[in-house]
Image (tube, rainbow over all chains, first blue to last red; front, side, top):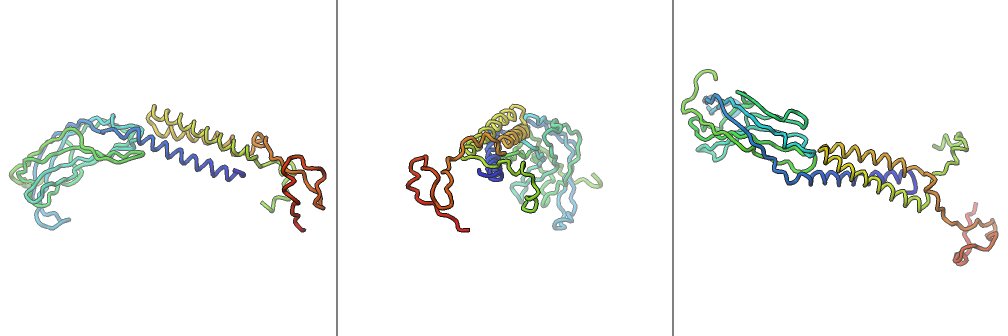
Length: 179
Length: 114
């Protein structure tokens, strides 16, 4: 503390420690949140084709096709410790080869400050609904649910499933021609 | 710095830049208290408005204020100078008996040979 630079060093180090403590306090203030919100999901067209997947084995695999409706209000999830939510729409189902299959069909990033009321009608999926094999035809229990990953300013990044899902039944016949 | 030293006017060279030990202690105490106070206020404001950026901005304001008050060698930090012994003449004898007790036991000061 006997020169300008030593005082500056001391003050700077103290400031960094204080800022770390404030950040930890910000984390503590939101650690008990459950990040749950109700979600309304429904589907429109549902069809499945059996086509070769050229990015995989070149065997014919099932390719599902759906259009969906989504409505939810995510505004209570945002607080001073949330930078953004990474939303993703998943389809989960069981086939005779694999007990659990999860496919992400659509995703969206909603940053803090952007519109948090989501209202999508008859929306196409962003990503292809490939199955490893032929497990979609006639599958009666494909569950569509909206999940989100909470990206905080400080702390853990939990993956949370929204309250509300939609069960899809795929038809017993493959659809010929274009979707 | 050494190149410009001969050109710096005496009025600037004579500005004191040191702090007493007591001044250093007070300066450190002052900036710790100021920064902690702004941190507490900033945390409360950030929690109320739910923006962590507000907390950081208020903390930075506290850092700037405490820097201005404690980093520079203001004269209030020189109010308790050390009680040095009176200077001795070249042959090692002090000009007058020492004022404070205990200095007699220090013995003769070593002189640096030029």
